[in-house]
Amino acid sequence: MSAESGIRTFRDSGGLWEEHNINDVATPQAWHRDPELVTRFYNQRRKQMQESAPNSGHLALVQLESHYHVTIITQNVDDLHERAGSSHVMHLHGELSKCRSTADPNLVYEVDGWELTAESKCELGSRLRPHIVWFGEDVPMMGNALRSTADADMFLIVGTSLEVYPAAGLVLQAPIHADKFYVDPNAKNISNIENLRVITEKAGTALPKLVEELLMKSGI
Image 1 (cartoon, one colour):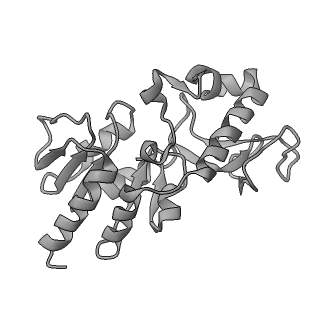
Image 2: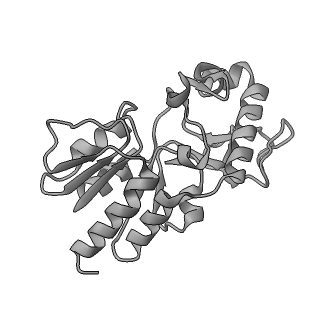
């Protein structure tokens, strides 16, 4: 979804984020090896995020929330869902707008502006790192995501390759009876998923139409 707002994804650019190999900027090893590079990289991504705006796909989900209880489980680390107006957003891979202590991961702070520096310290005096789940790290919000998925009456999969685990496995946890929709230009039917409708369009095009359909179907 964020790609339509101008935010690049690493899988859309051959394993690169802004010309950086993910192993150099998105792993714990990269941070220990060169924290300055990792910090600069996420500063630039944060700046790009703040210069971007929610698109029609984000806004359609806000419209859906006005009539349904909607929980958004996202792999994106930007804040476009929140800025669009969504109330219940679960970030599996962390939040670019936040940073956390390298001494105590429970100390999480909002980033003031877009830039962190080597002088940015937590209250314990330790350096701040991006509040991002890097490759090789645990996904703390996965348990909550599994519980929300298991309770769903409707499950929308939007703008993902379904290749990044554990998030890609969430659809298998959705109830059999739940209506399921897979929205992505490169989406393919998943034979072992019941009640699945595949929509091969971009989120910004498909979601406004799908939300309108769902609201009409519900008599709203």
